Length: 95
Image 1: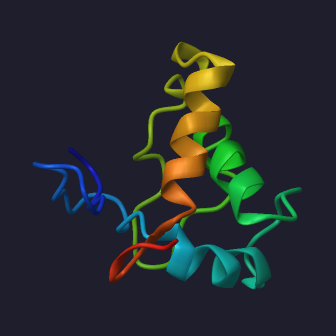
Image 2: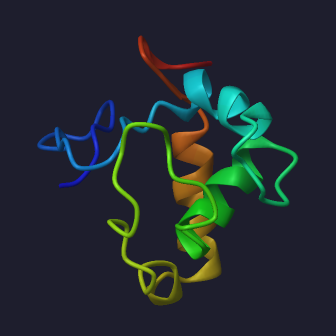
């Protein structure tokens, strides 16, 4: 596993940033280095899976997230992933 994801056993990776987008998503959208099209954290997550090089979180290496990952997911799976991740915070799932 490449990321830390709250609530997912074994998701304690250190290659990519922790996926606590309920906490970090808004900051990424307003980061001066972000040049994506997303206006919401949900859309940012979808965009990040489909175009992982669009924005790489500070302190993490570029070209680590596979470009093909998003193409292997159905639209429904991608929406479910985004819905889950946008609720994750450093303290757990937001209501």
